[in-house]
Length: 390
Image (cartoon, rainbow, N blue to C red; front, side, top):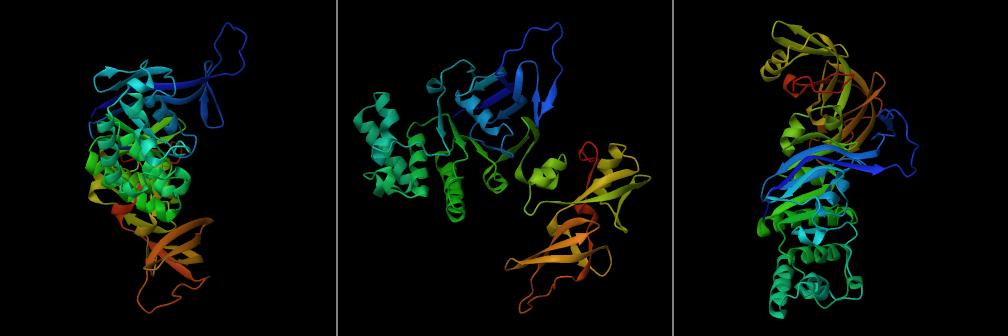
């Protein structure tokens, strides 16, 4: 078991073509979305995180945001360009992967096809010259935890995707590592299997009780698995917090749009102030903000200004008055209907509860009005994207 500390971690991929020496260093600029300096492309920059012993941390973000690169630096599979990495009390920047007391589960399973499940799980222990009795005990204990005892004599090709992933996890468990690293382990599974394996990982975490660092681009996995989640974009941490914290209090527009399904609705609006009281005005609808939001905005001395207003689909309410729009699509989801509403050139999504026996309550083309509570309004600076409350 171990605490993991990342201090000012940086990863730079050098330019492939050496440039001639110049008197002045070239200025930093962006290519695509990543920062480019005279050194090269900065894949991860100024990454600071303390992971407590036995904590489950999830790194989440879109493809190319640097989350897998960060995980591979922790594993020792990528060199660290700058900063310090500690596992336990040990600085491990230059420590070989095999000596870091970590185990990694890959997206592709990485099983040996010619070996049985038993031999795949036992392989790392054999390399360590562990006794046969100890190997057998550890393999069978891990197989029991993962419910794969009946498959120990099979080859990987005779297993389903979910069973292969269990074997890959079992191979990591037998090493009894201080830290588990998981790089998108469920992305190759279908939706039903992903749901099942998510539950299995939660159970596994409770049984083996060690430090987990998990990478995914799926925000549902992040929200259901993590004690805390680290949201990344373009190699930079956007926010760190519990799933509930980042859902309720997104630090910026990127986090607000990335976390939550369907994603948050965004409106062009105006924030008005009267003393220490604030209201938002969007599409002719004026809503007073809650006391808690008033206090935070007043503490930051936020002025009257144009804002981007965020409201989650589940917080929009159909009413007789409010922001006007027209229903374009109505998606029946069982207990609720997701309404796609065209309003002022934007596609707004609202979730309406279904009532028993009422079918086709929302014909296409129907005009509706939307409102929301002042406690559910999020106010962002339209230029910087920053949440004005925090």
